[in-house]
Length: 120
Image (cartoon, rainbow, N blue to C red):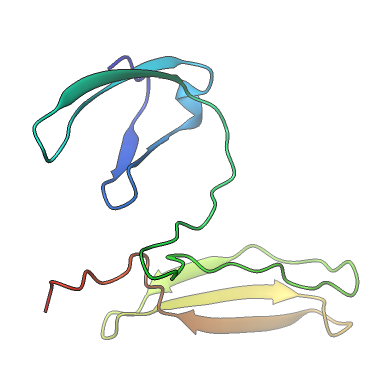
């Protein structure tokens, strides 16, 4: 309750994401657990760095690592689009990493959530 902008719920990890419109705003989250318990929690929306959530068994859902940088470069605007035939994203950008402006690209197939073990 009391959100000024749109919000997104991550049911797997129990997180709620808000837009900048709600930063500093007090929101009430009403919930009902799987055991039937209900409650209301009041939070102040604030910026927080997202950390990987560790699932049972120790596997991170979003493994992240810091990319090493040897020197400052001029990175161009990133453009991405979904491949219409495969479950991948194409990402294109320009960079001066090699000393002159060049076009770079890659494909990524992010697994945003772990596949539940009871799903086939």
